[in-house]
Each structure stands twice: as structure tokens, then as C-alpha cells.
Length: 231
Image (cartoon, rainbow, N blue to C red; front, side, top):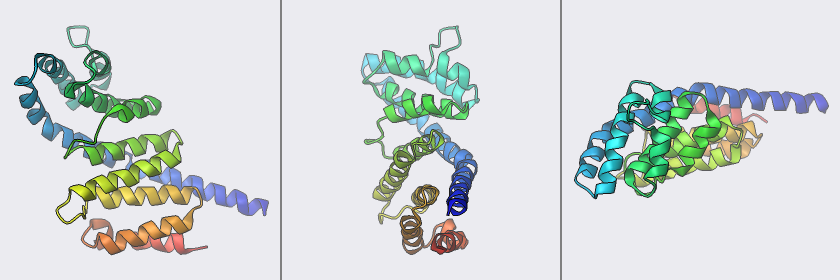
């Protein structure tokens, strides 16, 4: 019995490790791509907005430049030449759209530096509710950060929330990019907790709902269904 328990624990750990290795870069890259696309729209909107918002947006612009060039330390902490850093922008201009986005940038910067506790702090501060483009990917990044600090239940909740957000914004309530991957990640973490029945249901739901998603079309989801079906 002890050996079986040990084997089960090792299998769960391997599933968790596979999750964080396989999906770390895709999640971060997905969020980066989305926020880079909206950066110009955001800046334009806020340059014609209230003075405090405009000042915050001006401060944020230099950080976006450092971030896009993967200079994450400077993006976070400033350059000593006038730019103060995402963390200070988030604090000094709290309540503005720029400060909210600074929280997201800060969280992703910390994630890229492998500082996962700090990533959780800032990603959790980001208010994604009103955003139509970034929110599902940001919530997925938060789930990934939670997984890295072994807050597995919170990670599962975040991944499911990300999928629900993505689906709610799709024309037919079926997003075939972020949503199936987010649900897959939730399922993998459930497997890491030896909750195979719950994981199996998620995998089966993915196959039934997201029929045109690459995960389903490639047949990859069947591998997860088969694994979770094995008792």
C-alpha cells in the first residue's frame, strides 16, 4: 500500500512538472501578444483622457518599451533616468487604467524572471473584468503563476475562470484557442491531485464542445482522456 501511495504521488508530481514545463512559455507569449496589440489603442485612449490618466499613461509607455525588449528588470524597477518602473506606476497612480495595466505588466515581468510569488501578487491585482481582449489570457497567466507556487486549487479556479471568460466573449460562446487550453490545464492539475474523475469529465467536455480546436482536431485530447480513464 505504501509503495502504491508513493507511486501515485510521484505520478502526480510528474504530471504537475509536465504542466509547468509545457505551458509556461505559451501562456506568457499569448498574453504578451495580446497586450502588445492593444498598447497603441490604450495609449491613444488615455492621452485624450483626464490629466492624471494621461500622466500615468505617459509613464507606462517607457515601461512597455522595456517590456517589449525583454528588459524586465528595468521595466519593473525603473531605469534611473526618469522612468520609475511598473511597480511604482501601479502604486502612484492607483485607480487609473494605466496603473491597472501596470499590474499586469509587472506580473508578467516577474513571471518571465521566474519570481512567481511576486507574479501572483501583481497578476492578482490586475482587474480583468471589464476588458474584452486581455482578461482571459491574463487570468490564464494568473493560474499558471498559482501553479508555480503550489496553490493548486486557486490555479484550477483561475484556469476555469479564464476559459469561461474566453467563451463568454466568443460569438457562439465557444472560444477554440484560450478556452480549451485553459480547461486542459485545469484538468492536468486535477490529475496532479489524483482527482482523475474530475479531470476526465473536463477532457471529455473539451472533446465534445471544442470540436474545431487544434487540441481536438489533432487527437491529442484523446491521450488525456485515455490516461484519466485508467484507474
